[in-house]
Amino acid sequence: MDFALSEDLLEMRDQLRLLVRETVAPRAADIDRRGRVPEDVLAAFREAGLAGKGYPVEYGGSGLGLLGLCLAVEEITKYCCSSGVVLLLTRLPGAPILYGGTAAQKEKYLRGITSGRLRAAFGNTEPQAGSDSAGIRLLAGREGDHYVLNGAKSFVWGAAAADFFVISARTDPESRHGGISMFVVDRDTPGISIDRFEQPMGVRGISLGEVVFSNCRVGAGSLLGRENGGFPLLMKSLNSVRPVVAALGLGLAQGALAYALDYTRERQAFGQPVARFQGTRWKAATLATEIQAARWLVYHAATLVDQGLAGKEHAPYLAMAKLFATELAVKASSEALQMLGGCGYTRAHPLERFYRDARQLTIVEGTSEIQREIIGRAVVGGAIDYL
Image (tube, rainbow, N blue to C red; front, side, top):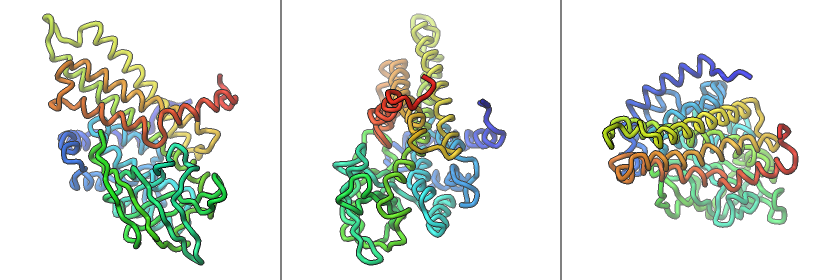
């Protein structure tokens, strides 16, 4: 197995590191305070072609695959998780279109994403559904050549800025898994409104809203894939995006540790830098080892997706990456905060923000409990063959 990154990926990563340090790092605290990623940062991302990371060249993408997107997310999230989520939102809503869309849908929406001309949001969670994706209640009733959508999606990341939404809906109330379909719906379609915005604990730079569909009438051309065939498409799409969420956790963990080490190298206590204490060194050693483990889990998971392996058989490996990396982000931000002592608990330093941001990552796109269930079923059922 070759663990080396290609020259193209290494060149992209090195160029991005400079961009992030100049554009994102100085603005991270302000993004958290103001609750939005500013347009000049988004413009810099567009100019650098970041919106096309993770997409094939034929749709205007970079051709560097999901691994390229994960590398970009990792670098950005070392400083700002909200800015990393901006890149996640180029892939999460696009995945069902990539896997199930028609040629016309891909041309319109995927090219819109990769060019930076269109922003998208993904809606699956509802008050009674989310972890239980088969429990969705938003209805899509067929009326001739149209569907009429009624219901709501909650906790929709990027709802305020989205030009279109990709959503799951129930087209057959009598069937649980077999009665779900997926749709792409333009924001300006009559019957769409954002009922309220949440005030999240972390990742404050990305809006989090409830999108309501009230007698929202869309043409049959908005259907992704086939009617009542949306559940497998939904699962494959969610599976394929888990490495990107894992990359958010990986980058955040690295950023937290790096900041703490810089601080403890300068902070003096008992006549020496805090970094020289055994307790600090051992914490750093443990976190560095776990970050390296997370890195290979994430890169392996992204490579699986790039090989077209995002179905049920490979879902446990994608879940492992998401579980391990996001829980490591919580641990690393907590340990790093502790290394700073009282200073870590203040807004004068970014670690309180890192900790708030990290907690969300263990919940979104499948909670840690859901990831453990996916992995656990595979382990107990013998689907993971190396045990």
